[in-house]
Structure formats: structure tokens, C-alpha cells
Length: 314
Image 1: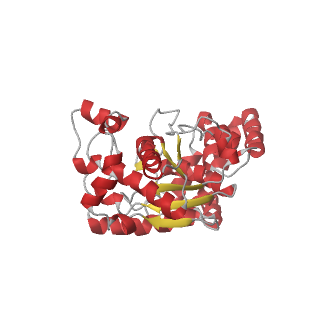
Image 2: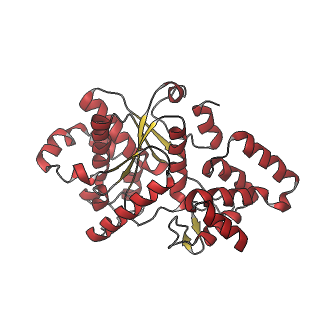
Image 3: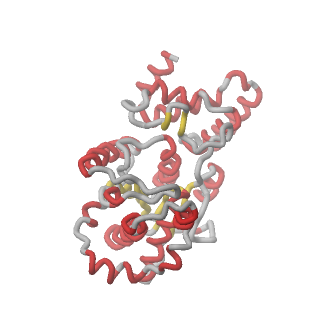
């Protein structure tokens, strides 16, 4: 199966800056995915986009994982209200924890881990405004969904928060220039920020770069954003969500979603998922799809030994 077909079958294919899906199969990519240290752990809502990147990695594309020590100082935009600024010492702690976590998630695979604080800390205001700010059109920026949502709900946004999209665009340009990055992947809520980098690279260097998002995963049984339980977020950090509770979260998936999640969150191939789907349809009371899902994802995040122990406890 071609990578483009696999991404569509798994449910990863969402917004793209290109119209020809064959580009994914014909071009060699050096891609990056960034995460800001707003917490000291990823939660399962983040996991889908990391698994999307993993598909590229498995096909021989180069991957850069970015921890946003620089952009985290400002804080990403939300469509509801402004984020509280995270204390600098907390950012440092979170950055270290996330670096360890993403390294474990891609353990055994070759990738590059970077921190945008390394280059953003040296950016000077006047050169930045002259060289970067002049490349952005306010009409384009204010037409984006996050901006319109904040204006319409009356909360507004600070200049610092508004400048975040310029910083993320700068990250893409910096990585393009220094690492040869030509594709950025993110969640669908990052689409506007991804476009900033694509446009900046085109305007500054006359080069073509691409952007692609994974869709927002919704819990079909509740209609809520995926990854939230009654007790809050389901974290990958075993100190925040125990491996037992983590396993139970996946085990309690509804029948409607279990097969979709096998495609999104596991490394199982199409033949394996199809077989599980057929067996589950014949005997849903055995909950084969849920058990396989829970075992696969818990093994990916916490390791096989811990997962075997959790299964015995269960």
C-alpha cells in the first residue's frame, strides 16, 4: 500500500497545501512536528499526530521532533481565551520531561530532537520585524479561524499571543534552511501556524515547502474531544495516569470507535486490522478489538513488560 493510501485508510489525511496525493509517494521528505512544553507530559489527544509522523518514519523519510522551549514562553493561541504565561522554571522542567517522552515514544527509530529556544533566544526585535514581519500580510493573519473566534467571543488577544504564528513560521524557515525540512505536520488546530511557515519559506527563499494536518479525533460515543475522561486528560506519563488506568481507558472504548482507533493509534497493518474487525463483528461480546487496542497502545507507550503486568491485574 502506498503511503498516501495508508494515510487515507488510517484516517490521517486531512488538510494539505498540495492537491496531488501522489506527492507523498514521489517526494523525499524531511518533516517536523513541534510540541510546546505547556505541560510535562503528552496526553492521548496528542498521540494521533505522532503516530502519523511515525508512518513517514517507517517509510524512510527523515523526522525532526521539536520541543518548543522558545515558543512555549509566549504560549500558543487558543480559540477561547488567552493562556496564562507559564513560569520559566516550569517551562524548563516541562521541556526536559517532553524531550524524554518523545524520545521514548520513537525509541529505536532514527530522528532528530531540537529545541527552538536555541535559535529564538538570539532573535533581535528590529531585524525580526524587518526581515520576517514584512513578509506577513495582516489581512491574511486576521482572516484565520483562531483570530476570528477570539474577536467574535469578545476576549481579544494580546500582541504577544498574536505573534506566535510568526515565530512558528520562523521555526519552519529556520529548519528548512538548516536541516532541509520541507514538510511540517501538525494537528488540525495548527493549520494557520503551518501556513505561516509555508508562506515565509516561499517569500524569503523562493522555495516550496508543504504542510499537512491530522484531523481532530472525536469520541463518537460522547462527541467530546478525544483524550478526555471523567477525571480529565489521559496522560502518557505513568505518574499522571497509571498504566492500569491508561490500559482501561482504551479497553473501555465503544464498539463504534475501536476499529478506527486501531488504525490511528497502533502499528497493526491493514490485513491485521481487517481480521480483527471481522472477528469482532462475529463475536462482539469478546471485545477483541478493545483488548487488542488496549494491549497495543499500552505496549507502545509503557513497554511490553508493564503491559503484561497490567493485563494480569485486569
